[in-house]
Length: 221
Image (cartoon, rainbow, N blue to C red; front, side, top):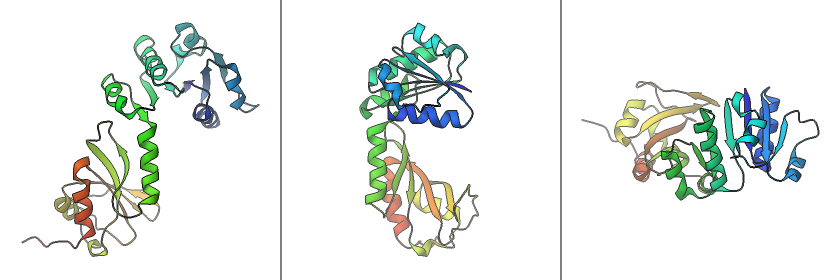
């Protein structure tokens, strides 16, 4: 794949190196030529100086043959404008923009541009480390309506089937991490000791889901 990145900061340069190491061709755009110093000496991709929403700059970066476009500059407006140009003008389907203001993420999502709201992501990562118990968000949609969370459970749930967990919590058990491997459960999959459960539920239901799983299963009549 050929991938164009706007923004040669820490995130952009790291992405460029990872993508190149995985065999992809990369072009990276930044308005400050000094930013390219973050690239290793052996970087083989294109370095393009300019604004990522300028058509000539994008064409120099090879946008017409790109399969993906990533906007990770320090400006929300620049990121979203360049992402829209990449998608709407050049027809790049796989586009993502970094957004610092999580309040804007919903608006941009409605424009068809997937976004990574860094403030929310960082907050969730911190919470996963300072709150070892309960439900820890791994992902949420920009509105916070739907959450994917890692949940702990009372040992009394060991031996329960997935359908029983889902019936009791009202949440969907998306996958189980078992002995370091991800498992997509079936209705009759049994919860085992050491399992890490990942559920999908409405954001406003997570407190109740956590409360149910921290208690003892109630037998249905």
